[in-house]
Image 1 (cartoon, one colour):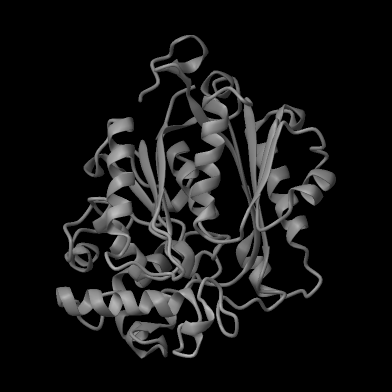
Image 2: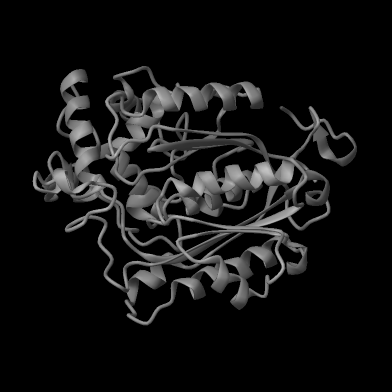
Length: 389
């Protein structure tokens, strides 16, 4: 589906949608000072205010409110969005950032509302939240006695199998961690801005073998917000619209954070739909924003979405160039292991900033098309296109 400039921005009977406002907190500054009284809803509200300002629209135009990890009752009260026509909460898991965009697009395309705010807040670092341990996350009690107490343990198990099947060496994940740090160095709000070497990577301690410290995301405080509206409204707003050329989702749900095919079938289903709908293929993407709660997820995603052949992504990230001057830059703000773990939300902000051409020293040259991908129990992807006003 492509935007043809027709009246009302409609194609195939559905209204076209754009991301017109983005806002987020300074993740590095928040990481530097832990505050036990820091409020996740306040962080989300700060990000929403920034997104409204960024879009240049009246807050009263917002008709839909989708919240993740914060509650819509309180968010509506502290932001003054008392009379939204579409309102719901999503759980505080990383897969939900893609789901939120997918649902907002559906609401706008179908005409239920014209403008939707997506809001996320997290005070996990300050309240010493742990993603794992006793009662750990998506696992069930039976698994905990065997040490499977977090998503990281499951991803480590999946990667162990991947490495054995495809001959990935001990340092196969190092290029991903190193690349994230290189990009974070150019991002003034990133948490981990110090570069690391292959030797640094290999010297870091194991968390869940074979995953090391630098393979893990950063638990942090922060807020992120996105505002989506129709292409017709977007053309009158402050910035170059970022059109959602395609979005899709499919699930691979069990009691466990794992998949025998590394989420491959679900990724392939979503990939087929977003490439068909958008008219773009993997080779057309100018940058990739990949949900990277753990570095192996990047490999699973590249293969599942057709950027690399099965079993070769570990070589692809080493040889193809995933930096700013490479063939397909990945996670240009630093990703979850260096910028911050905003559970996929900040990846969406970075995609928009890149497509606007506003990323400063980390700007990808001639960035016109970007893809967000999340390989998880709910797989999502969007193809985003920077349009002229």
